[in-house]
Image 1 (cartoon, rainbow, N blue to C red):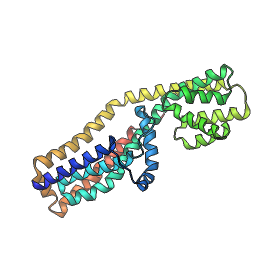
Image 2 (spheres, rainbow, N blue to C red; image 1 turned 45 degrees about the vertical axis):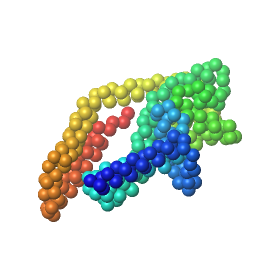
Image 3 (cartoon, one colour; image 1 turned 90 degrees about the vertical axis):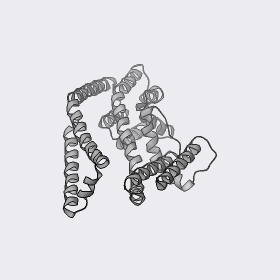
Image 4 (spheres, rainbow, N blue to C red; image 1 turned 135 degrees about the vertical axis):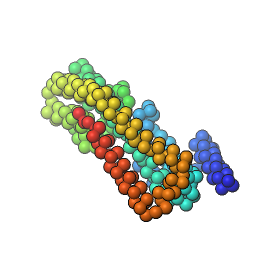
Length: 287
């Protein structure tokens, strides 16, 4: 009981210290830590655009790693002891924040692909009023909807640095993960090189993107029942294991008290993981 009280006290003091640092108590974050997390912080700033934020503080990832390690250590140590808690907390502290960033980056690009047809329509409207293509791209960067406008802003920023529109579009097209955005960059780059009437091809491209999005929404709606069954099956299995662990821990001890029991438990975990990823891959449909 004293050890549990010590753990809770350390967690409370650590959380209070982190909160004070976040909310304005004077302090200097170590420069090596800031440099080491600079790339992850940049990715976190992009992921924050899902919530309408342009950037996150430079120390955000340091705090995220620290809080993740603290939370995992307390949870695991209360169940299995402090040694295992320390062993698990260190790797999970680095994996968990990055996994969350990757999740929100995927959501960001889903938002961008949803907004992309309307950004293309905005470029078409600007070109039809007689504006140059570079000016039309800058207009989307300045007045477009976030986060799609941030991608056009990258192209506009490179133009301000003296890079031509063609080279800026080519570089941007090589770096974005979205196939639709690559197509837009390629089309804009082609007409920037050769000239001609760009309004009609971009209009047709925008219509195609909208039809693809509608088809994708139909697929998501039709597969909602399968995804719900997937969550229920996997969540129910995990909940049952937790109920047995907390309700009848002697059963868990019997399983892990023999080599055969450990082998059966490991085989069950492997089969569960195979089934999980198999069902997950079956539900992924790309349009």
